[in-house]
Amino acid sequence: MAKLTFLGAAGTVTGSKYLVEAAGKRLLVDCGIFQGSQELQDRNYKPLTIDPKTIDYLVLTHAHLDHTGWLPVLVKAGYHGPIYANPATIELTTLLLKDSAHLQEEDTLHARIHKDSRHPDPQPLYTSTDVDPVLKLIKSMPRSGAFDISPEFRVTSYDAGHILGSSSLELTITEGGKKFVVVFSGDVGRYNQVILKDPTTPPSKADVLICESTYGDREHPDGDPAELLAGIVNRVVKRGGSMVIPSFAIGRTQTFMYYLRQLEDQQRIPRLPVYVDSPMALSATDLYLKYKEDHDLDYVKKEGSDGKGDPLDVHEFHLTRSVEESKAINNVKTPCIIISASGMVSGGRVLHHLALRLPDKRNAVILAGFQAEGTRGRALQEGAKSLKLYGQDVPVGAEIVEMGQFSAHAGKSELLRWLTGLPAPPKQTYLTHGEPIAAQALQAAIQQKFQWKAAVARYLDTVPVGE
Image (tube, rainbow, N blue to C red):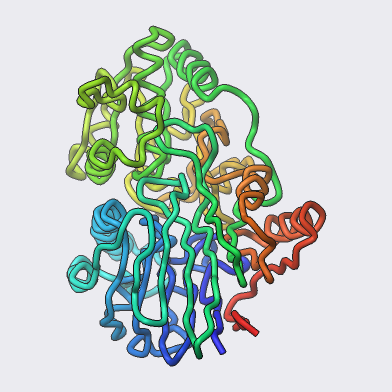
């Protein structure tokens, strides 16, 4: 009998890994890193409950590290099968893994020099040399439509509207002359958002549905994102401050650049220096321009009839490649905007910008996405008076602004809207990729609205797919 095991993103938002076993074959859907609390991060250093050498195939829903960031560990541990993804996801995953390895090396070196790690000899989870073996295993699959991974597994992709290349997957399993269908929502994006098309619900009669629940307990706030962003920029500039935006290099950075360009063109904000402190973010932005099939109609109109316009090109753009260039932003004393990874303030270059600018009440920090439990971003969101950065307690004087309007994840009602698109009730629904309260709230909403069987997935549980 086919079965499914939750190796990650169960009881938490990160670490997505779903193992499907059927007809003597094993398929892993996603291979993400755990982020957040120390207990979750420690899971990254523990081996899987199964031998990676026994996994036959792997397929990715999208490129974010909580869905791809554990690939180097898996391959180092012996996985040698194909890793299937669509072309945009392949290019973004390549960027992300290289950047992740580099940041881990940087952070490890800093911890060794400053002796601010809880480990006597801190080690990166993986290094840059561990990434190339992963990239050699990646194989292209179609952006949409059906693709045969093997005689046992056929996958059909639908646009999830979350980031470039993001997909919901319909997996058809053939075993013993019977067919079973498992639908993986992946990360469901927002409706009516800039740049990307709306999410598409797979028109599938699913035996099992795996649905994310990141915002299963709440809605995103109302309000026009452009107007709210203009208000923040203008009031911070008026008091002589600067804005730091901890932002995922893929997705959120491009959204901010889009709105900033429109606001500049409309003369609703002054033209400020915008520092994108991430070479990866620039590369990702180039890919957003390249893969036009993901663009929504408004974005296409702004590109122009020749398709050569760039709606993401702010007027005073500064890219910082080296660490030295990044640190030189500290010398900028006039109002500016700094967009830098990581989005949950869990590491990366944004830390030294915050170390300098958090104490000054003229400045602002814009939190624009989900902040996982145990991250510095969550601490700021919850009103922390100080933040531990590089072993020092840095006072929080800056204005902390939450902008849920910029989230790339569907809110509760949007998740229910996505579920409404299914042509028939799944025989069983499992909720993943959410903290317990969020998953339980979505479970209750599904049971009330649809009268479906829905359960909150539990870490390392194995469940049947077809009975």
